[in-house]
Amino acid sequence: MKLDSDLLSIQEARDCAVKANSAAQQWLHASQHEVDRVCEGVAQAAFEASERLGRLACEETGYGVAEHKRLKNEFGSRAVWESIAAIPTVGVVREEREKGLVYIAWPMGSVAALTPSTNPTSTVMAKVLMAVKARDSIVIAPHPSALKCSQETTQVMALAAENAGAPEGLIQCLSEISLGGTQELMRHQYISLILATGGTPMVKAAHSVGKPALGVGPGNVPVYVDRSADLEKAARYIVASKAFDYSTICATEQAVIADRPISNRLMQLMQDQGAFFVDEAQAKKLRTTLFYADGNINPLSVGKSPQYLAAMAGIKVPDDARILVVPLKTVGKEEPLSREKLTTVLGWYTVDGWEEGCERSMEMIRFGGRGHTQIIHATNRDVIMAFGMEKPVFRILVNTMGTLGAIGLTTGVMPSLTLGAGGFGGSITGDNITVYHMFNTKRLAYELREPPTAALIPGAKLSGPTPQEIEKAVEEIVFDLLSEN
Image (cartoon, rainbow, N blue to C red; front, side, top):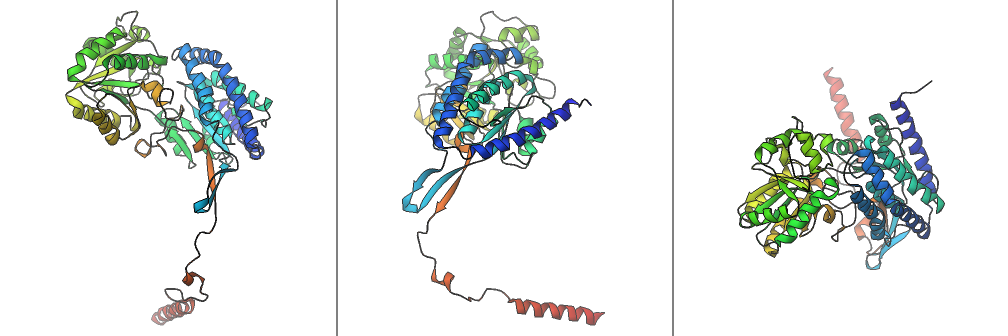
């Protein structure tokens, strides 16, 4: 009997969870040396396949730029591994002798990892390395439109892991994709942690299962450019960041908020870098091209070049345009282009001073970017610190590219492709997700102080009525009830 695809995916999810649990039980006994040897081999294999897998991701999804996906793959393999290589994850990982505490690492178990179509291969790489380093097994549940490249990436890493001595089934990827199958995987009794990267519906689904979940969603990232900024650098970085992989990283700039005294100069400098500013008639066509009437993004517009978008919208743009910039006046449902745009379209606002820039940034953050990222270009430390102290986001990037700064390539934050948005953004953490989030820590606690004497006295009278007093009161109530009848 031939099973339906959804039934096949459910059965596969169950089989993968069982296999992952078996592998996790074996991997639990690995030494730190064995763990690091396997991870080193896995990272190297993924790094060496970065170009091929980046090209495969670009061809399969139709999103982004193959060369940029190669760079993201190199980051997701080598940079992520180098950032966690020295972190102890086996046995005693820390001691505080003065407090009588010994900290012992303990893996989560088996991880269900939901991965997106925008950064499929690089996200798989990073999640696999973090899980294996923490002594977890992992099952990848890829986005349907990125199935082949996600499977291939997982296979490369799984083969390298097994060749280095890891148990079979430690690293797996679903091949039959359906909503039912992914839900079955997340709900399976052997899955201990859900690690979800993607759109809001995916993250909500992960959090609704009732298990520990690290879910991260969209970012509507404002970039404020102050009158004190290095304008040449700001223009170069903003255009390059928005153009990088055709804006498929969730931390990419979504709208420039320009301080009025430098607004015209910044506009000219961005034009010199390949930014094309559209007029209102062109903007009107872009609105209906990028977004449906209900506010959802048109997936056909995601990760596309300005020229591709122009053809979709029926407008003309220069052949050398790297991004399209749309002057906007408001933020909210009435202005679709004030939403997150995972493509080469950037909003533009002009404000009077950093205080107004702060307010406009807050509007964007509240409208789809809660907890995620804010970018500021400035040299005035007071202005920089005001943004850092007031913005309800967990990455405030200063004088760098949003795309590469938030993930940790150009800044000191932990390298990751899974960026927490904190409680304000519906996540359990505001951190860049890394290996620390993939294992628990046991505490071996020695006595430091003797207990109070009163705690050791035998036969101390408990507060409240005694059992005998309670029994007598119940007998009286029952007697009264019987007398009434």
